[in-house]
Image 1 (cartoon, rainbow, N blue to C red):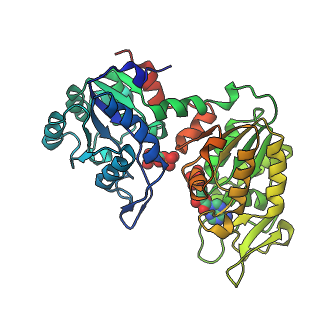
Image 2 (cartoon, helix red, strand yellow):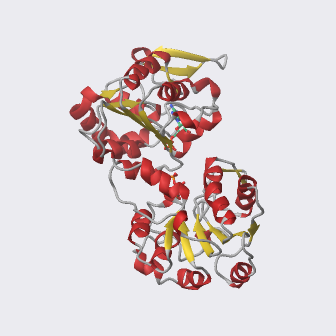
Image 3 (cartoon, rainbow, N blue to C red):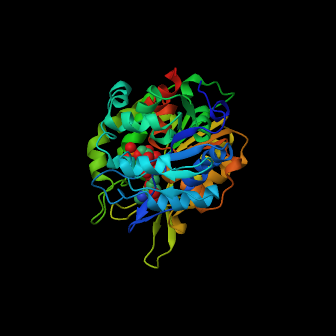
Length: 402
Ligand SMILES: Nc1ncnc2c1ncn2[C@@H]1O[C@H](COP(=O)(O)OP(=O)(O)O)[C@@H](O)[C@H]1O
Ligand SMILES: O=C(OP(=O)(O)O)[C@H](O)COP(=O)(O)O
């Protein structure tokens, strides 16, 4: 499908696109598995004696998470166990000087590519290849490596522009994610296929369900999304409480589609039987969905639900996870998400865990990644790939004929 790092040779000037987009709290970039994963690609490039220039993004203009990549350079350097120089420029004179000063085996990280006006417009590869950004930077390199699978759903200049003008290769993350996340519709499994769908984004989940029909035998729902489906099924669940704004606007936007899905596929959709909440004494307590009152915030699925879902997972040949079953960041409400991940880990099924937040639960609760077939570091790209949609970044890499 693609050329990989094995095909590059040695001693080249390599421009490598990573996805180090991370949570940012109070201006501090939070460490996460994207650094560890991409470090492998960078380390291999260093060991092959290339001059390595890293290109990446953080946040979007206007958001608090839109910050410089200087912290990313330090974090990545720890994982690569090799110094990484940082230059606060993308393709101006300072960047070009720094690139030309590199020696073999040295690594330089450029500033956040989304600080360039040319980066973000969604345009065809040909237009991006003709941008000032790509035309200025490309001649400084012998080849381009794309490791940023989790941005492959964006037709941005740093993703689709360079493969048109430089020999292009897939990095290790790109190749592994591509392999594991291909369309469910094109795969054959020897038994039932189950999707665990939770988290906070109803539209993402509904899009997945709409795109996949006969391929999926069981949908196990949880999180905010599960509660919205319970609301459609007539329970007093899935309503905003107090100042919260998690449910009602999503309900307004998605009510019709949720009702249609329940009507069409109710036999394959399993909803939570019980839910967990926080007591006045700040403890976890559970109640059956029949007993829930509208005024209570619900923060996890209950233990009966986990047992029911575990039975279905144990009988499945393949399980795909997108979205958490509860607010796992709070240990009291992690039982649903972690309990189900533990069942998947101990079951001999093909398993893929995706979604930026959900895969963080694996790290947070010390689950061993090796027990899953694949833990994706992608969210939007993962969902698009599973539902058979094309990814501009993957297409650009595959079509390169340089
Ligand atoms: N009942 C709930 N109430 C509030 N937040 C929830 C609930 N269940 C799950 N969440 C939150 O959903 C987030 C994950 O949602 P989402 O961003 O859709 O998933 P991902 O990034 O894995 O695709 C988690 O951070 C979790 O805290
Ligand atoms: O983190 C990312 O996507 P994700 O939240 O879908 O995993 C990518 O870096 C893409 O970022 P974007 O959604 O701002 O284009």
